[in-house]
View: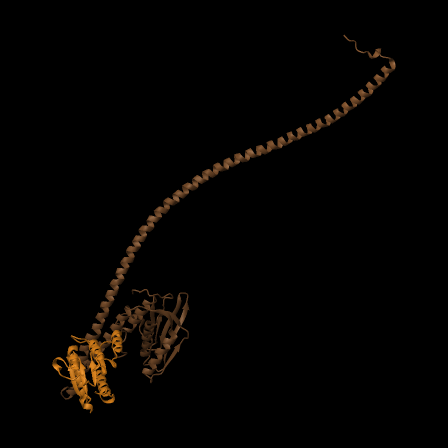
Length: 147
Length: 362
C-alpha cells in the first residue's frame, strides 16, 4: 500500500514548498504530503502534540524531507529529537538544504541522517531531485516496519 | 851572682861531648823548626789559597747579588707596568660594566616594546578570528538565503513555460528562458564568490605535494566528464612542491579546467603541465593550444569576474583565475600568463620554497 505512505515535508519557504509539491505532482507522487513550516510544527507532527495532538508517534512517515534553516526550532534540533526517541528514531530522514557548509554535513551525519541533498538553484535539476527522492524513498525503499 | 858554669871551665872532653850534643840537638831542632816552618808555609799557602778562593767566591757571590739586585729591580719595574696595566684593565672593566648597564636598560626597553607589540598582535589576531567567524556566518547566510529566491525565479519561470505554453508566443517564451538563465548564472556567481571567500580564510596545512599526480587526477576527471573529447595531455613526472594540498588542487583544477574549456574547439587539443628549474626555484606552467587571449588584456586576467571572452564563446564567471591568483599568493608565489589570440595560452606560477602558514595579503 505505497499510497498511504506519508511524506513529512519540513520547509519554511513557501516558494520551495510550492515547487516541491509541483515536482511531486508532475511525477505522480501522489502520496499524502504533510507540510510543516517550522521546526516546532515538525516536532508537533512527529510526537503528536499541538495541532497534531493525539496522533500516534509510532505511525512514522515513510520519509521526512527536512530543511535545516527553520524558524523556532532548526532542522538539526528536529533531527536530534527524532533520533533520540525510541518511537521515532528509525524514521528515514533526507536533509534537503541550500547549505554546502561542511559543518552542517558533519553534524547531520553525526546524527545519522539517511541522506543529504543540496537543493539545486536550477529548478529543473531541483524537480529532478524531488522526483528521484520520491521514487527512491517511497517506491524503491522499504520503510522500517510499523510496530 | 852565681857564675854560670862556664862550659869553658869544665873539663875538656866533657866540654866537647856537651858541645857535640848541643849541636846535634840544635841541628835537630833547626830541622824540626824548618819542617814545621815548611808545614806552616804549606798551611799558609793553603790558607792563602783558601782566602783567594773565598775572595773568588765572594766575587761570584757579589756578581750573583748584583744580578739578583738587577732582577729585583726589573721585577719592581715590571710590577710597576703590571700595576699600570691592572689599573687600565680595571678602568676597562668599569667601562664595560657601565656599557652593560646601558645595554641592559636598552634591552629592557626593547623587551617592553616587544611585549607591547605581541599584545597588539594577539589583539589583532583575535579581531581577525572574530572577523572570520562573522564572515563565515555571513557566507552561510548568503549561501542559504540568496539561493532560495533564485530557485523561485527559475522554478516559476519554468512552471510558466510548462503550463502556459499555449498562451505564450515565441518572444514570451524567450523572455522566460532569459529569466531562467539569469537566475542560474547568479547561482553560479554566488557559489564562486563563496568559494573565493572560503579560500581567503582557513588555515593552510603545508606538506609535500605531488603536483604531477594531482594534474593527472584532474585530467582523468575531465575525461570522464566528457568522454567524447580527444585531448592530449603531456604531464612532466615528479613535479613536487610544498603547500596546502587542498588549495593547490583547487588552483591546478582551475588552470586545467580552463585549458580543457578553451581547447574545446580544437581538433588536436593539447594540454601540457611542466616546470622549468630556475635559481629561485621551479616555474610551473600549464600550456594549451586553444583559443588563447589578447596580451593587451593580460593585466585583467586575474581580476575577479573579469572575462576576456563572451559567454556564448566560452562559458564561465571569470572567477577561476582570481581563485588561482589568491591561492598562489597565499603560497608566497607569483602567477602570470602569456598568450596570443588563436595560438593558445600558457599560465606560469611559482611557489615559495619555504612556504609557511604566513598569510599573504595581495
